[in-house]
Length: 114
Image 1 (cartoon, rainbow, N blue to C red):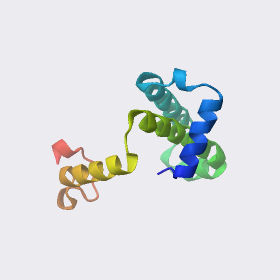
Image 2 (tube, rainbow, N blue to C red):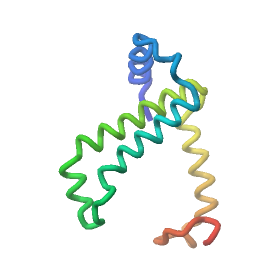
Image 3 (cartoon, helix red, strand yellow):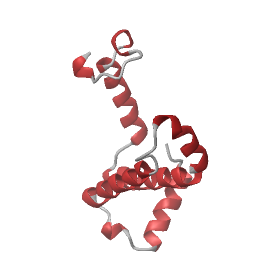
């Protein structure tokens, strides 16, 4: 996840601009969805076979969109008091139960249809 040093830099950046007043669950989650859509735009009409070229040719743009998502998610987690590392660990345990290797390996089936 984000280091404490980078978190402090992000929080200082936001505070210097007085942007905390605009950040809440709705605005940040909406912004995350919008940034995810901007990430998807790069592959919207690409064929699967063309994806490696998209990654190569648009690597910097893709990385910037991912950074936007990470920044917004970091603000949201901070503001809500969510420890993202622990949340991810808990979710991994849940996913392991929902997607046991014996049923899920090599298939893209939702857990309730395995």
